[in-house]
Length: 410
Image 1 (cartoon, rainbow, N blue to C red):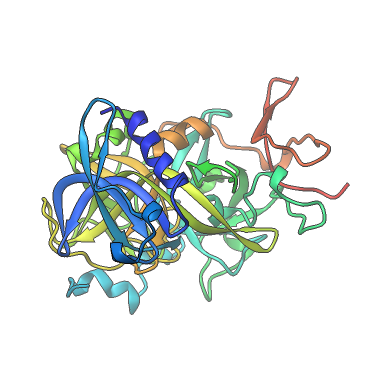
Image 2 (image 1 turned 90 degrees about the horizontal axis):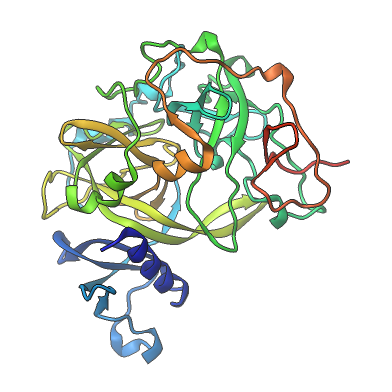
């Protein structure tokens, strides 16, 4: 089946069913606590009820027909998601008592380490997922989530002139941002650009970029991930991401809170792709607003390296890991497939947005240590647009692309 066709069917079910359904995806069916190798349409619900207690129009189908006459069974599981059981390997949880090295200060910079927007969110922390190349300016940038580096990432047309007025111009990004080590002296650059989110349609990426200083980058090591043996990491292709349930690769990730994951006894595994999820709350002018994401990757932690998955362990992602790169091993070649940005409320499932969508929308590419330029943060250029713009960016008459940076009082 074609990925686009499958995604359209999943989005239609997600849009046209009641609010009890918070997620719909294509993934592995769960039976008696075991994740089998049977692929099905997965419905995630806030509360799982017996059919006898459901109105007829709320009963989900037992099968879904794809246009090429392929028929998929369905599965209903109870779970919710938020930003950010069995007896599992104790070594996986040492971060709960012993902070991982990912929270330390790193110069030179690398992926998988503590960061924040110090100007706007000095009491918040997330993960600098990777170092990449901004093709718009041929410069090196740090990549994380917009909810890590942006205090209000909503498109300006959804904001109000009478609400909180914020703008990212000259916002400092620090590394690290930890208790006892939170200071403007840890600045690594300025917030550069982000892809705005919306509440009136599906979002596909949660991403923001920061400039970095040339003095903080090493051409031989800044493309590494703290705690993982991976070094040069290309971006996975669209075809590779579309076929994750077929190739079923092992996954890896390094985050500020839980450290490096996937190379020990416990493994990260794909559960669903594509996956559509709703009721994830983002800050808009001081209020939590529910938004929906589509075409995501849903994953877990387990002992099992092949199907069936007989046990799932907590914390494939935890608060502070947002922005972590999600990496897949494709027959011995490790590639970045996405950015982790959310997890289920029971701490058993993680959600990541796809790197190919980030690559296209933000015009970035993988960086493997080649010598390129750095942004000059002393000469930031801007244009002012009257009203509440609905544009993510504007290609202006000077030939440059100007990205939305927030609201400003005139």
